[in-house]
Amino acid sequence: MNRQLLRIGILASGRGSNLQAILDACREKKLPAKPVVVISNNASAGALERAARAGIATCYLSARTHPSPEYLDRAVRDTLLKYGVDLVVLAGYMKKLGPETIAAFRNRIVNIHPALLPKFGGPGMFGMHVHEAVIASGEKESGATVHLVDEEYDRGKILAQESVPVQDDDTPETLAARVLEVEHRLYVDTLRRIAEGSLEFPQD
Ligand code: GRF
Image 1 (cartoon, helix red, strand yellow):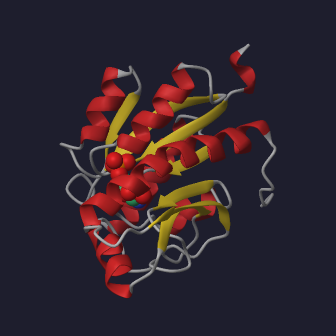
Image 2 (cartoon, rainbow, N blue to C red):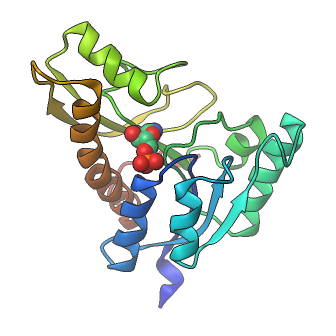
């Protein structure tokens, strides 16, 4: 019965609220997917705790466990392969994936970014920096983007976007909170469409 569930491997570095939204949706059967492993580069990530609480295998892989970037890349790839992952889901993963992992999962890695790409993406655009930059630019709209991951930061094909207004009295924190709410819904919804095959998705 579970044979049709999309097997997802999630990589996360921080508190893991997007991970939690995904785990909840899978548990509630709103998302036809099975989270099979959660990998983090941060041993004390809230994401690892959330995964353990949900009974999902966890794996800590970092420059400490693997000082050579090549070995780290292979360890990430091999872990995803070992768990039979169909789709790699980045949820606040702060490290760049290595070339071996990207090659092994080409067109099968997705990320969520807390802005309307291609604006406010690229190196240095993470966390509060994104929301600070949006407010400083005077944009009236921000939002969240789900996109495919390739060798360049925040450049892969855009799969879904949803916007939120930027209010005159917004601080980076209030804007981040408004965007985060959208992220949780948009990520689950986009993964559901991928799992159901209703989203146009490049086939290698
Ligand atoms: C989110 O804002 C996501 O867009 C970005 O990193 C943040 C992760 O938050 N890539 P969380 O760990 O899912 O709470």
